[in-house]
Image (tube, rainbow, N blue to C red; front, side, top):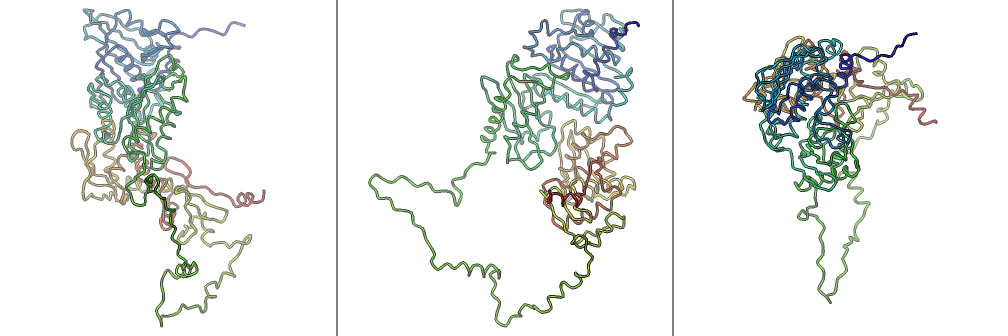
Length: 615
């Protein structure tokens, strides 16, 4: 039998490596921009088309490369940042693995133009699917220009699973944010289909945050500054009242590198304990400076998960730093000694002065039974000659109850019998109870029905919005005082993209200057919802929606709008509101599931309840 183990060709090995390094267009943007930063660039320009599927171009003003270096950069394990294993414990550069360019060239059509300051001419290299097409001298500016075309052209299975342009664009914007925030000394621009999304000049951390997320965020954040022998922590955290229900403005950076760290995130959340509205997340931009020897950034292919040597101590420092910052800016509640009913601290007596014991006043005429009588009558004393309560014939209130059928000692309600027969249910007057302002519980024939109030309204609103989209019968409610909102460039581009579908749903939103929009009207079905809050939540939900085809844009807009407009957890509902919600839910075509396919209701069978008491 012949040998079956063989070495993979370099082109195949590069495609396999690309599966780890290059997951989507945003991965290419990340690797190229990080290389541009390591080259010492002070200006980086990113141009993309069709969310990076057609073209990704990254230009920098860095040091450039010689002809030999330019060719070697596309080889596997080629890097200028590591010479020995010890260098792994002192890494301050961004890209160091030496697989990025080789992986990109294996799955795309790549062109490079690069020139050093001391060279008279630059170098042009064209590589297609790991195959070198041409290398020749070329006239170009100092620095480097990478063009990546037709990503995944030779791996159709990978290209097929790319998401919609809006989703891929969102990931690219996230990567630009993660690079731009910790490097305010570098000017960065981002263009999508020739439309400027970001034009970030050189600045400091505070101004960079404002340029990325809009001027309004300047009123929402307070500074953090802590210096210790273990780590230096700086940055900004958001005020609790501006916390959002969706994540997206939470950033950790260590030595100017973005990282994810759930453990430190819990430290932040505990620092905000009892200060945040329910189910909300605070904004934070925290920059760590630490000795590279005390961290390991080489534990994950994307280098976003970082291991710290002394995580517990850093956890305490993060928690204390945020509490201190919130306390300095009067966010953490403090004792007010000027308010009425505050504790009076007695002044120490003069030496030799007699101290009088405290006096306790006692009402010896107090009669608790008199108070009980007043409570039972509500403090109301009927006038003489007033009509006495009618206590006759009270037995008639219970007539007919003895004739109702019973099962296991419990009467069967008539409406329960039709609950699953499709005949409709009249929930008016049913026994309804809200639990933790999140679930609605009502008895049914087989046990207890538990309904998720938020998902239930999402289903109701989604079907209403879909009916509007299909019938194009728009009912728009014009605002008496139109609201103006200012968005960051990324959200602005998305709103422009979906504005036509929002108009079909009853929105009247018009552009008013750069990244500014005026909300003149909203769908009538939103009732008293805040137009600004609905639009902001809609954009967040839309960016996170799993849209994967243009023809489904309207459906995903309806899903996002339903999620943004639905009542949130923590809201107390009156009995008639619960009854109205349940009536509308069971009038839906698919009441059992939310628009995203999550369960809306569950039945706890009676036998399970009974077994709980007879174990």
